[in-house]
Amino acid sequence: MGAKTRILCIAGPTASGKTARAVSEALARDGEVISVDSRQVYRMLDIGAEKVTPDEMRGVPHHLIDIRDPEETYTAADFAKDAARLIEEISARGKLPILAGGTHFYFDALLRGLPESVPPDRALRARLAHVPDEALLARIRARDPRRAGELDPHNRRRLIRALEIIESQGAVPRRGAAAVPYDVEWLFIEPELSELRARIDEREALKFPRGLVAEVERVRARVKDARLDELGLEYRIVGEYLRGERTYESMLPALRAKLWQYARRQRAWLRKLRSEVIAEERPNQDRS
Image 1 (cartoon, helix red, strand yellow):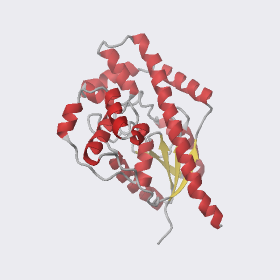
Image 2 (tube, rainbow, N blue to C red):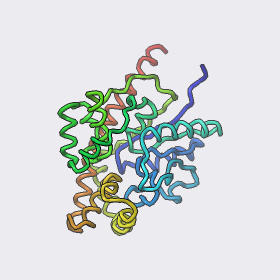
Image 3 (cartoon, rainbow, N blue to C red):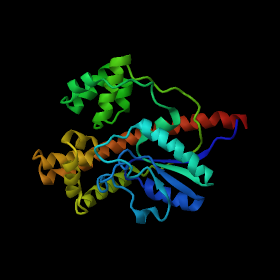
């Protein structure tokens, strides 16, 4: 067997500085960046998704950005296939593939594989269409507490998908410990909690003068409200304002609070991942 393709993976919570660090690493190590972000794949989601700008790229090629329209779907399986292809293409050019982003399920899909495929259950989806997210999560927690603890409680599409698999198999299968197909170097970005919270607060405040509400209005004109809610917290909360369900003044505090909760869940995932990486490296060190 030949040597595994070498890649650099940069992971961290929202607003931790992953984008800037990926560009710096690419410039220093002759690399190209593959975005690991479930929202930056969509056109039009620029401000809400905090999409990297051409100026921020500093000439470094970036991949898997603006490749779908917002009414389309892009799954973890799509990402795993596209990222695997790009890794080989970038490596063949003599460049270092650098994967950076906050969609941790995408990292898992690429490096550890996905659960066994379960076909969509259209009847179940129809029954769950108007069930609140909190109730969906409660159903998952009652039948598969482990999977419930791994899910973003605001990612409706993934909540419903988990219930589909649970209905079919009784629980969402744990991904096996198959060998990672790449030689992975991990770089974890973990600011202190106070610094991270300040970054989140500042970043969200700046989105409104940059035109977040107008952006959400444009996206909403293209997609239905159910799809708008799937595109992330900014689109859900501003969508509530546009539908008259909340005041303008309530949007920023709600976004800050929800994103802080999300960042804390991301940090928990990072701690778990770091422990797994250390455990995997220790046998190699013991053999050296």
